[in-house]
Image 1 (cartoon, rainbow, N blue to C red):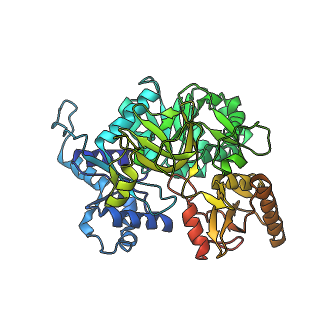
Image 2: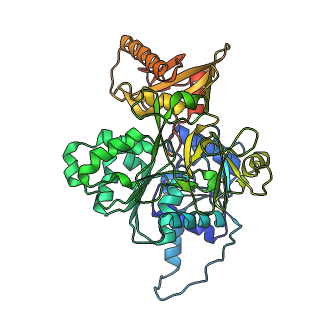
Image 3: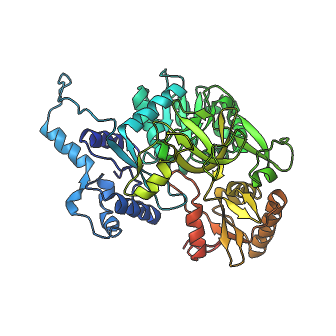
Length: 518
C-alpha cells in the first residue's frame, strides 16, 4: 500500500482486510532513501499487488529496478481507478443494506508492520487481527474508556504509532480525528497546533522532536491566535522523551492554555503492535534524576536535579492492561526493581514473529523466563522498573562501550545539540567505530540550513564538543563530522538511524559541511 496520509489510505486498508488479504503499509516512494526502503520491503514481503494512486504509479520504473526478479505490470493497481469503476457500475442507495461483511478470524494475519529500521534493514512484524483489536481495547482502557474525544494526527500512517494511535484507535472508539500529512507538519509545524486550536482537539500524538520544531519555528506573534486549552493528552513516544524539551514547550505555549499535565510519555514498538506502557491521563509526567556515572556502570542511583552529572529520565508509565513487563539480565533471569536490563514484554499485543525469518522470530518472540511458560518478546531495549512504572535507558545495539563504561548515544547527542545554536535539533548521531585499536566514539552533527561557518570556527566547535562531552560523560569523542542539514538518515517516524549514519561515514558516502549532499 503506497499512499499519502488521508482517506484513500484508510479506505484501501479496510478494503484489503474485507478482501481477506494481508496489508503491507509502506512509505510512498519519494526520494532515494524512500525507494531504498521500499525495495527492501518489497524484496522481503514479495507482494502480489501494489495498491497506490495516480501520483505514484509514474514512479513504477524506479521501484521495479529495485526488485531482483521484476514485478508484473498488471500488479500495479490505482485505487482511485477502482473507485471510479465501482461508482460507474453501481448506484449507491442509502437504504441498501448491501452484502454481509466478511467475518475476520482473530488469528488471521492482518498486516506486516515493517520496523523503522533504525539499527538494520526493516523487518516485517506479523500482526493478527487479534493483535490490532487487543491494542485498541487496551489503549481505550488505559485512556479511561470511550468518551467524548477529538483526535489529530500528522504521523505517517505506515508507521506503527501513526496507524494504531492516529487512525485505528479513533475508528475503534468512534471519535472524529483530523489527519494532516507528515510533510505539511514538517514544512510548517504551526499547522499542527492550528489544527488543535481550530478543531478543539482533546487527544493527539507526537514524538519528542515535534516539540522542538514547534518551539523553534513558531513566532510569538501567532501565540494569541492559538487556543490549546482543550488538549487533554499528547501521547509522546517513538524516541526518548527529554525533560527540557517538555518544559520548554509547556512554558512557551502555556499562554495558549496548554497544560503540562497533557504530556503523556509512553513506550511501544512494532513487535508489540505499538502499545506497551504509558502515563495515565491527567497525571503530571514523572521524571527521575539519575547519576550519569552510575548509568555508565549499569546502576540506577538517584541524584539531586541540580547536580552537574544528573541525567533526567522520563517514566513511560505502567504496562498496558493485560501485559507483563519484565527486566531481564544477560543470563535470562528476571531482575528486581531498580536494576537495568533488557525489557521483555508478554501479552496479547505481541506479534507472532517476523515474516520469513523463523530463526530471528524464535529468538525475539519466544523468550521464556526460568520456570515460566509465559511467552515474552525481547525488545532489544534497556530499562528498569520503579514502583511499577517503566523507564527506558536506550537500545542494546546502540550502546557504546568505552573503557569499560556503558554510554548511551542519546546522552552524547543531547549534549552536542545544546552546545551551539548552529547545530540542528534532532540532527546529531553518536555511535562507536573501531579504528583498529579499540572502540572509539564518533559524532555526526548537522548544521542548520543557511549557516555559514568557516573552517576555523568548525575546529573551535569540534574542540568545544570534545570538552563538553568529556566533562559530562568522562569520555572524549574520537571523530567529529559536520554535515549539511538532511544528511543524517532518519526512520519514517523521524528517529536518527545511527547504524545507517555509521555505515555512510565509514564508506565515505556521508555528505560533509559545507559541501553539497552526496
